Image 1 (spheres, rainbow, N blue to C red):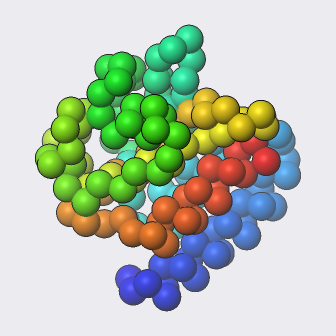
Image 2 (cartoon, rainbow, N blue to C red):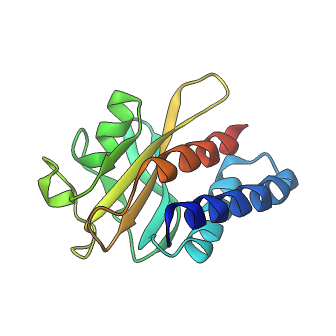
Amino acid sequence: MNQIQKQKRYDRVINQLRQLLEATDDPVSRMATVSSLLYHKMGHFFWIGFYRLIDGQLLVGPYQGIIACQKLQKDTGVCWACLNQEKPIVVSDVEKFPGHIACDSRSRSEIVIPVRNTDGAVIAVFDGDSDKLDTYDNIDQVNLQALADMIYG
């Protein structure tokens, strides 16, 4: 899919989610809906979901794809880097990322977006994995951030 097609597909997904997320303001329900729709509508996600910060630990939340790591080792990997730096991280080759956590060895590239609550605190990360190198770009980053902002928005 080219860049224009990718953006158009994200536009459709975001419009659909605006309607779906009106049903509840519960963040876990919203995470589940976002993960499911993206997994089924955007073919470049091998795994897509959330890790929630609970009592100082990153624990798996709603997701779609292969079985996930239940708890991520503190201050290790892309998800913790995103949480600690409070900014999106795009990794074109996960094997070149220091301390990468491989929940599945087929994962080759990754994007992680911070999820903020209504007070602006990062309380989760939105994690996408691909089984291909160099999958994610600025279009993914901007649109996934918009979707992450809808969780508590």
